[in-house]
Length: 418
Ligand code: HAM
Image 1 (spheres, protein in one colour):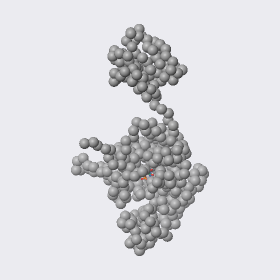
Image 2 (cartoon, helix red, strand yellow):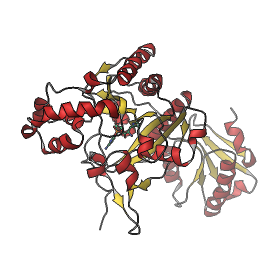
Image 3 (tube, rainbow, N blue to C red):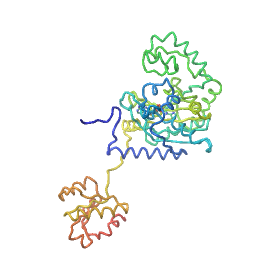
């Protein structure tokens, strides 16, 4: 029986890993320019962390978590998102005693049992940042500016920042009552998902992509028009801070996000260049999350940036970097079986001097070895033949200039001195 990778997962092949390393390297650099430090949390957590943190009624928790148990006692879940895990770690490791705000980032795989399509997979990678311990709108603006900066660094255009405020538990309660009254008479014309959302989290209905639901909710009361004073002034200040940071945005009152922990600011960076998966980066503020999962009240704000979507976007916009061909420093071509053995030792010496070195381990003809050296893009080929090696010398071919000359085998490193 032949196996395939599980549905919705992808191999990142050797031809693509240099691109991933490049993108990840850039994200590490960007995070450090903004003062974020890397955190790595386990790939799985207690499932309850996500059902409490992300929300019992969310699609992520009800439909998309990969859960498993080892003994019958505990239920675990592969991490579907990073925020709840980072906040769990912040609480558990007493990070509240560190100088505030605490600024953390991660580049990690997430797992969601979604229906795979272009830009949507079951295992995907997020660059995520989380700032804990600051309630200010300027922190929200800084968070957003990390994403705007990253998009610019990767040469991406045609992405629009949409912002909204989803209020706080105080103003949301009164708003939900208003919205529920509005939705009640329209439930029959909405999709089954929205009918159940209307009871659990009515705001999510506003973000449904189905035409019938969009028509039914046209003219619905909006959170943005029903914010309490604190949330309204926070949203206003955010807009001043974004303007000061020279970041363009549109206010979109229908951005509601699919995770329940958001309060006040919610935002998405949207593009038309990715088909239906239009969000490349999304996030917001989550001031109640720490308490929900058993910690002290701790304001927080962050985002998740989908790296697969970024790569698709870079490809679609023709801004993938040219990373050059793979290159090997030295290839030892051996002309006899003793030389093939000696090559192993010489290659080890080269590596210990920081020179990438390869040998022929398949007893190939010299012609086949040269073809292989060419494929490896070797800078030099060193021909080992017993007669010469016994005198400590070998012939070298410079693969760029095609020159051939003899060298002392103890001086291979000097080839790279220039
Ligand atoms: P999210 O909107 O669920 O938020 O995901 C953030 C980003 O992850 C999306 O904009 C998208 O680029 C990428 N993404 C999500 N699902 C998939 C998928 N199935 N396949 C490929 N890419 C995907 C969160 O996860 C929050 N934790 C973000 C956050 C951090 N909020 C505050 N802090």
